[in-house]
Picture 1: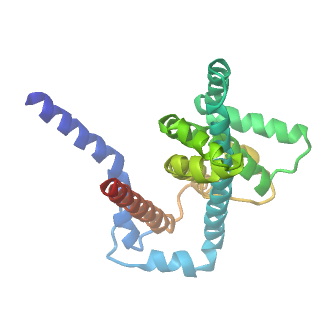
Picture 2: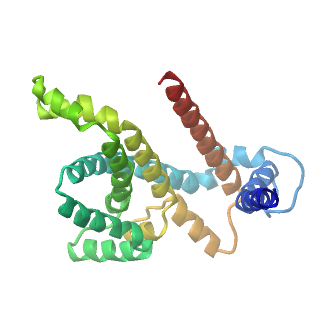
Amino acid sequence: MVKKIFAQTYLWLLLLLLYSPIVIIIVYSFTESKVLGNWTGFSLGLYKSLFVNTENHSLIKALINTVTIALFASTVSTVLGSLAAIGLYDMKSRWRKIISMINSIPILNGDIIIGISLFLLFVSLGITQGYITVVLAHITFCTPYVVLCVLPRLKQMNQNTYEAALDLGATPLQALWKVIIPEIRPGMISGFILSLTLSIDDFAVTVFTIGNQGLETLSTYIYADARKGGLTPELRPLTTIIFLMVLVLLVIINFRIKSVKKKD
């Protein structure tokens, strides 16, 4: 009984520490005070200013860059990671272990190491850094996570189903599309969502590959804004909107998973 109470207390304390800063940001997004912690009355002024005020054009542009880069990188990473996982699954045990270990290196490495390595690679190849290099960098560190998400689904799949499709006259491409892809789709969706989150959240890799062409993402914008001595007040409503969108997405996914399990 004592252990149960202690465990629940620890859990609630951990959740409080994790989410109380977000709650504070959400609360103070509904006041026009420029200083966080100074409540000047309920107002939607910051939300209006975020989308109407031309001074926040660079912030909205950084948000658009962040979302488009994340979508491009996540989509390509999901395709490449899924194909890599299928190829890895079909390898012999010895080679599978070696390639799996190589796949884990970018995950275990610090982001700053990946960022510096890609920066040196792009410089040595004479590639101008900008939007394309950031997308390529994000694909590089997101793909290994997709591989890890898809591999367990492949291990759960009945291998005889794929072979039966081939015996019934399906081409390897048709068997891949109609047998393997439906089986690994939950892993692909998980990998896509994880890649999307990692890409939006990334700073270290982005700052080394973004170049000096004036491109900004949300993370680099916030970093530059913080170095000026404070954060733009409109970041509070933007943070609130992003948090609520992610929360709604998670609720929809959980309901979908529950409905699929009930049907099964």
